[in-house]
Amino acid sequence: MIYAEPRVLPAGDLAVSVELADEISREANARVRTLERLLAEARLPGIVETVPTFRSLLVSYDPLVLGWEDLLGHLQALVPRLAAAAPPPGRRVELPCAYGGEHGPDLEEVARRLGLAPDEVVRLHAGAEYFVYFVGFTPGLPYMTGMPERLTIPRLDRPRTKTPPGSVGIGGSQCSIYSVESPGGFWVLGRTPLALYAPASAEPILLRAGDRVRFRPIDADEFRAIADAVAAGTYRPRIEPERAEATA
Image: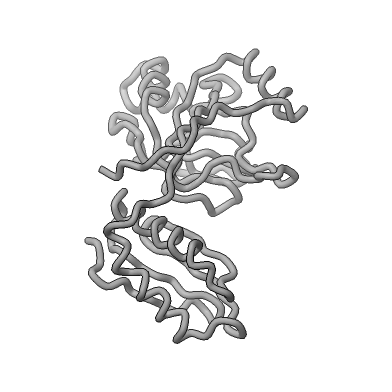
């Protein structure tokens, strides 16, 4: 349900959480990103950072510059505009992905548990378009929906203590990509040679909230070639220009 009036909750003494719905949906997330956009356009002195999630926006602020009551007043003034305003345009991003083998150690077991051939798992996974709700947990890690129902599978009983960056994993009804080496409970189907988090880059985070992602299957040779080009700073991901979002 989309709230008629957002719930505004203190998050410590330097931030506020603005909840816009009690559901995970494209419509709720579109409103979150729209509020973030409107707040950015307002250029309020004292706003330090905004962080979108599935259904809420965290707003960090400097109380010495922007008081609590003034912040609430500005937020409430933006609420009537949310239904009619558009969220920021999204992009379409292609991610090369080497499935199976050393890059996708769980592909065979996932196929066995789902009663599918490994090639069918790859076909289903690479044939879908994934929507990035937001980025977080670790720097650059996307929270995405769009995975085919036939690939729904419980997460690992025992999470890994280390998963390489770029690993493409599934668990439950979600697909995600490990942006840095980290523990995790997703089944790893493959790996992209692209860097989702490159702290030395001018744009350190590859994916943005609102992006649409498709995976392009590649073999081990192309994985190495792209990884080398990424390391040399010569690879340019295939990203289509921004376009208006259809939230339906």
